[in-house]
Each structure stands twice: as structure tokens, then as C-alpha cells.
Image 1 (cartoon, rainbow, N blue to C red):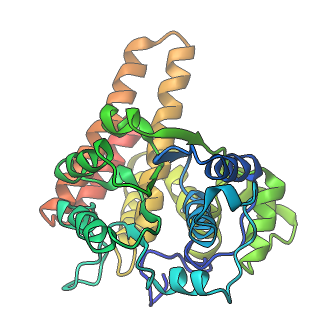
Image 2: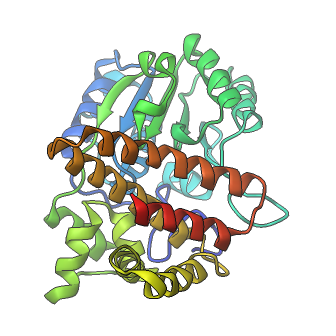
Length: 343
């Protein structure tokens, strides 16, 4: 991951600095038209799978609003940000007094990103609004992602959304909006983004300097990326393809062979600097179990479908508990892999 920002994947550009956006023209036009009308909603819930451009769209729209503060004079399209403009430079450096980016903080002791956005982070929004209340400028908060808010933080955000300050704009990002508090969803205007098409994914990767060059590798990345740039980068730069292959071997093997395969995979996923690929594996594991449950349901085996769907939640709880209490990751993974084999 980036040394300057541990949340940015190798080969990626921080959304605050990214001038490229592909595949979401309709969403761009919708946001621009809403601002130009002067009747845009104060909170937009930008929904969609991780890695498809939600944060980049949010920063692009924030740049647009800050560059065109008077709605009646604003164009009805989002121009590509000019990296040399004062607004773009302030956003890219995190120095804008009119934009607050709420995301999971980095633990100063470990250097790792924390597992949640805490209420202390949300309190920054209250301080932000009090500091800028007399300027007359737009004040924009990007919550990236709202899925990461813990319960207290979510309730604190809700209070602000219920009584938004004048000329405030909340851009609330969510990979799984169904997990958000219904009261938060009800106070936001939904804007759903779809996974990128193959062409848009290729263009996005090329813009990042990671072009798909054809052949079997390109076919594999397209199939496994599911329209997500971040997932494609994990496949290309973090060994994601190999992790999926190793997991398939675990599921397909029996006896001592399966045990050896489990140990090999658990060693990789619990090694040093394995946080990105560990998260990738957990996502793939969830997809695997959901697919199993769907297959069982279609086959009429509702008991198996229910058991497999419940396993998604149970294994997620096991991982969360292990992380919270700093339990041995390899032992946790061995247990998780065995449960997946039995699914």
C-alpha cells in the first residue's frame, strides 16, 4: 500500500487526487443538475460495490460545488478537475477548510488503519461546522464509507443529518447500504452506481498505469474483478488470483492434502503486511458461501441454503472477534477454512 496513505492500494491514486472517472456519466449529470437547480438534497447516499469510483465521484462533485458555489451560475455537468486550480490543490492536500473527509483513522501506535470510524472522528464534523459557520461557503463532508461507522458514530452522524447546517452537503458512501441505520438511509437521497463495464474497467486501469494487455490474464482479471478497480488491483498487484486458486484447492482437496493446503493458505494470509490480501480473501469467502447458499436454494435444499447463509454471518463474527481480541490469525483462519470446507 502507499507509504503516504495506507488506505490507498499499490497502483491506485487517492480519490482526492484522481482526475479520472469512468462509467458514471449519468450519476455525474444527476449531481450537476441537482446543484444547478438550487434544490439539491443536503445528503446524497452514493451506493455501489467497493472500488467502482464512489469516492472519486464524491470528490469530483465536491470540487464542482466548491468551484461553483452559486447554483444559478453552475454548469449542468461535472468538468474534469483541474489539478492546478486552487480548489483542486487544497482538496488533494487535505488542506481545504470547506471539505472534511471522514474515514477510518490510522492507529498511531501500529500504523494500521483502524477497523471502524469512531464517534471521535464524527465529532470532527461538529467542530468543522462551528469553525466554518460564518464564511458563507459550502461545507462538504464525505463519509467514506458509512458502512464503517460504529454504532455511536452512526448515531452522531444521524443527529447532524436531522438538522443540517445551512449550505452543508453530505456525500455518504456505502458499499452495502442495507447495513446502515434505516434512519440514516431515510435522510439521504440514494444514488446507485453500477459495477464498471469491461471497457470502463480497462480504461480505468490504463489510466492508473496498469493496462490489461490481453490473453488469459486479462480474461481472468475481467471475470474475477466484477467491475471493481480495487478488486482488479488486488488481483494484479497483491496475488489475489493465487489466493483464489489456493482457496479452490482447499475446498477441492481431501484428507492430509487438504490440511496442507489450509496451512499454506493460512500462512500467507497471516503473514507480515497481509492486511489487503486478508481482506480480499474474506470478501471472496463471503461470495463463495453466498453462491453456495443460492445454489442450494435453487436446488430446493432450503435447510442447506439456510445453514450456508448463516455461516456467512457466523464466520464474519468469528473474524471480528479474533481481530478485536488480537487472537492468533492463523489458528482463526484454520478454523474458518475448515468450516468453509464443511459448508
